[in-house]
Image (tube, rainbow over all chains, first blue to last red):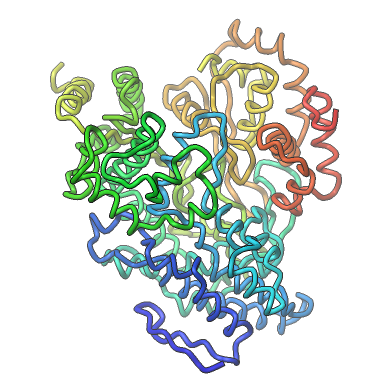
Length: 460
Length: 165
């Protein structure tokens, strides 16, 4: 192939040439419609409402992930060269590199808000396909371009999709796609930090990469006596300081950027916009301001959650809809569209801020809010609740076993980073949580505020 | 919520070790008509209820459940243990009367077997996945080895929740 070069704000020059394992395939994948769509899906959704520089796309991120994945594959080759890990598997390495490049293609517009809205529309019983599932569908789609590109290069599209779908470590090649040092997080932590302009944390990427090792870790739940070993990445003890900084940088990005109060409030508005569109379609078959063939109308119509309709959805399509509805729509939907267009933030009550040292009052006010606004949640009042750990937001029982940061000690044993002697990072007894309420109407906000103030004793 | 978590923990012997065990245990009991009222979605350790997780946190804050952090020998990975506080109440006795045998069966399994059992049930009955066995191996890989899938199926059979019946 003719050597191709891309300039990148994080990695400088990224070269695609015939010396790489799969550079030619990767370059062809970049030209497919599903990859090009990511030019129009922003990496951080509405974070640019708070951090104006954070307008980078999932397309740029995916290229960066591929670039780092190549480095990680070379680390695997180096580790295999040191002995004890068998032979380098060319096919698995190629599969992992393609999976790294393609891992984000299934993201919808405003990814988090879109999934939140779809989940609440589906109700308790119906399951929705999340972005990981759409990624696999796109890779395995017999009518799609990606499967053909991979197959022509002798790479099994199903194996690529499986690597992305797998929840439990498969082998060291899987660690390129999912581990504490996977290519995804090594790119997004650097890119998001740079593009938001936040100075929090520091990532000593060169020293970290130099000290990545392959290790067998126990992937069973820590509370069991089952010992289930799986290969993944860990860090040599020599990089312990850099590992602590890396973990702190990640944690600070969560607390300062991803979970930012204003960003999450605007995400609530975006989710409400999607929900309201769905309701208007199901009530009247139309959405004021949108053509009946608009991609959002098609997707939210009965039976509309098809792969083809999903592919049409991008941030730009949604922004066009927001503008059209703000001009020509009506009622609650128009109100939300105008708020998004004009950055008219909802009022927020953050219970952690109000009761930083008083969990009891926090719980009692939360329960009172839920009673007071029971029939308004998702309409005029929104709640945003979650817990997080050192490893970021906890969206399940526990973090993935392979995402824990393990340090290899001089004696070859691996330890979770918080348990290494003299670690400056400690595990918490209870994971911190956030509990925020957003209000579209001033009167509702005032009622809630009065209740919270009363609990604080100001009106006692 | 229509059950008291502290009563459930008391009925389970006063202690439930680990978030995964607690979540899968309540999920499976709900399939036996425990009627907790929690809703579940699939996450990487199987069916999971964010509402249950939140309720547990609240119960700990309110002092109705104790939560203790322990660390796995060897690699130091932390986990939590939930313990009931105070005297056993009538609700705990009622849960034990209705679900005592099932609680005993589940408490005698490892958390991995419980995770597999709950996931098999979810795949077979909630996702209505015909090839739930293949899908289980795809999602859980090494966890399904060494007879653990058979143990999970045996547990489901004892609970009357077998997908192969």
